[in-house]
Length: 212
Length: 212
Image (cartoon, each protein chain N blue to C red):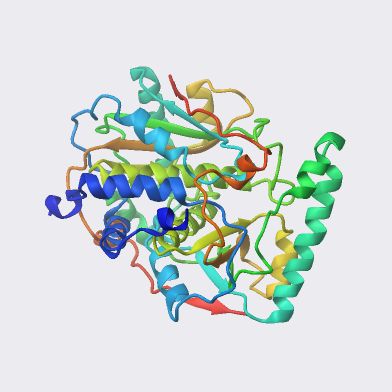
């Protein structure tokens, strides 16, 4: 069966590199909704991600109720105001100009959790590194991100939230661990350069490889 | 610039789905080395991954010294023996038959760390969720995994290790957080179905999407 998996040609690899290059964390969305069935299909692709012990511990919650979305926006505003206040004085103006989420415009809000109580996987690979469970969920999120981008759908990951408050707002099982809050929709603009770099927050560094 | 990023055609999306489907956690490698420059190129692609605050906190360490590789193999053997002993009696024989790593055969050993002490990103997005830093590194690992697979190179992630011991064996800065130990090389066989499923450890579940 080797030929089956090996047959990724140079044109595909070149397009994959372009996908990785253009992925972006999107914070400016057009309001128009995703096509019918798109979110379920993307979540299905995300479930192809690797998971420790084949535990598939990801739990996806589509946040649709307007009052819950409003509560999440309020939580972001509160956490972001605290983060701004904690910035060194000389960076506060720059921080205040950043747009760090697209919660107002994105047609899809998707909260993602890990379920450490799952029996699936029988605990394999989690004994010395229980965090491998959360890492599996992160790879599912990243899979969804790439699959969405390949369809022209942008995604932004909001981490400026209090995990306990998000879990309370969304009324999920106590055992679940909040991983991230995702905004999905069609991007209002496209850039090869990350927004934080364009706005002068930070520049990308050259990658090095150490050896031992 | 919209057309630039939007232009992923159906053929590419179909190939991307095939890549996600065939990725696999590889534990059986051919001994032959990777092409000259392949590892550095893959690490360069991994650095296109998203990172919180554009912090790029990933640190890649190619483990080459035979004595360090041997020490890692010994650490795996120790941790795996403990995991076997901790299994319920009725699953011990099944666990003992699993092959959970390809440390002996893989031509490349790559240890991956997060550096929470990095000034890059100025702490953005890490205040309420400091774990976002490790999650960024996990997305870089997943990027590397997909990019490698697209070149016919297989990867396996070893999590049955003690993070503190790995850091000691590899003599990395104290602040670094161990994320994962990766084996890379050409796969000895190819399967669409995960090895843990083929060996009867666990089956993949159907993915559901909740709403709130």
